[in-house]
Length: 117
Image (cartoon, rainbow, N blue to C red; front, side, top):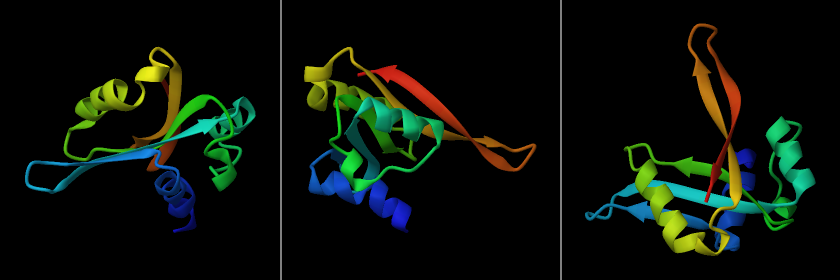
């Protein structure tokens, strides 16, 4: 629970999130972002530590702690974020850490993903 508090609640306080609903008002996606210092970004990407409250506005580097789109709306969310939220940062490199399931060994592998906003 404390990990979710560190990864989600600060984004509400800082208005660094988007929540999406379908035409019937059902939730379909959630995304949040932090602006990290280079040092904080490197520590998070290496798995050295988890995101903490003071990280959220510690620098210019865009990091996405959560991108939840369980019903296949991920591309639409990314398009909306680029057009509506991150237009001033167009072309800037951003990153996230995803979990990739290794079924054979029954474990989750951390995978850093880079992309442009």
